[in-house]
Amino acid sequence: MAYLVPQEFVTKMVDAGESKIFMSTRDTLIRAYMAGAILALAAWFAVTITVNTGQPLLGALLFPVGFCMLYLFGFDLLTGVFVLCPLALLDKRPGVTVGGVLRNWGLVFVGNFGGAFTVAVFMAIVTTFGFSTEPNAVGHAIGVIGENRTLGYAKYGAAGMLTLFIRGVLCNWMVSAGVVGAMVSTSVTGKVIAMWMPIMLFFYMTFEHSIVNMFLFPSGLLLGAKFSIVDYLIWNEIPTVLGNVVGGLAFTGLTLYSTHVRTGAKRKPA
Image (cartoon, rainbow, N blue to C red; front, side, top):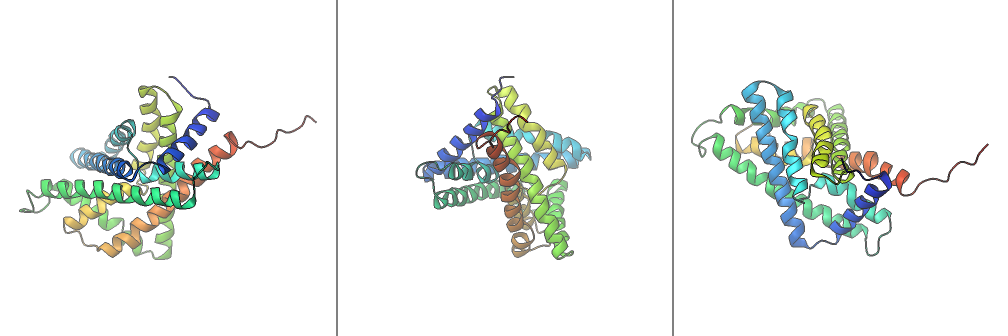
């Protein structure tokens, strides 16, 4: 596959971060909304496969189709801009400020949530025949996910919170590897292959992804699962967002930038 060397694709990451910071509010919201919606559809799809086949690996194997679609269409996930935008700040691109980075993150959060919540409402209508029956097997499974990954962490207290945070770190370590993978290749086939592998890994390992959870947990609430909005925010969404920031930035963005753009001085021959 057509391939960029590390110095080239890391520079491309910095360029992308700068571009997103200066993007108009309208375009940022539209792209984030569509990214959240497509990823939510993919999560619904993967849960349906798992329920219908009893094979979680099959659901994880096919979930990355949503991620590949949204990145090929040029849409933005919060987990992606967590990695790219700070690099433009670190590279001291003209006009890039902390406020600009935070503005982009805030708009993408709102857009992603809007898209994911829209699909959550659609899913709840479909799986209950317009709220006239109990949720079908897929709706029930989504409700159980919401309970297990809020109250399931809460019952362990601080240890549960630490586990949740680390799962968020691990998740965006892999997801941001998918974002970078899309920049490594210049062919569609190469991009898809490079994105597919880390996304499949994160989904099968049930790491915590802030955007997927914007679909799963509001869905559970709409379908009558036994946890509250506060449970969702405290025992999932907020720690997951923080873990995603650390995982993507520390293990992908900063490592690549530090060694391929700001390289250290070469050792002198002995």
